[in-house]
Image 1 (tube, helix red, strand yellow):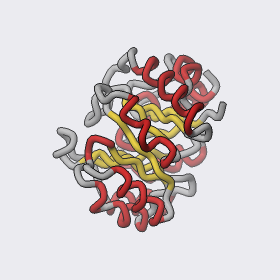
Image 2 (image 1 turned 45 degrees about the horizontal axis):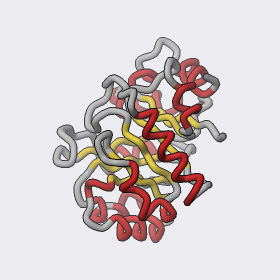
Image 3 (image 1 turned 90 degrees about the horizontal axis):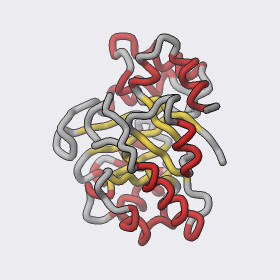
Image 4 (image 1 turned 180 degrees about the vertical axis):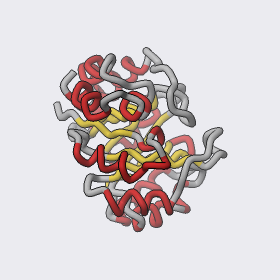
Length: 216
């Protein structure tokens, strides 16, 4: 099964953002994860279009943009225009997930959908054929540095079984409390893409931590 690491720049040093993005570019990471928070859907505010454009200027790797915002359909086209290669929205943040999926496809980006830890995996069944990736949140979205929720492993296994039935090419991404210490368990459960923020950017050797996660 394909393995990828997508370091989250939410944990980068914003005073040296170009340096940290270039580190990811030179590492074994496949993507760069960009967490967008609006202070409404989640109790935190991160960054938006200007920062995304700044990252895009120095990043050749795909930008994996995670929208933790209400009414994501209002902003999808602009995020795609400003450099997002993957756009993931939350099932809980919209009344019309299929419309969001259509807008992302129309924008030329790949489609991801995410669910919070308490949202049943089964809720994805009606639309799982329509997306390229599902992001399982393994912490409550909104803040970095939280501890991994162990029950997330069962949710990944459940999703992988559903994907094998309905969308065999589906990528499963996991975000929250991930490091080289639990990466192997996540891959074994069925994950493809691991998002890591603090464990990468606060490591003594971030590139080595990425390598360790990838080859766990």
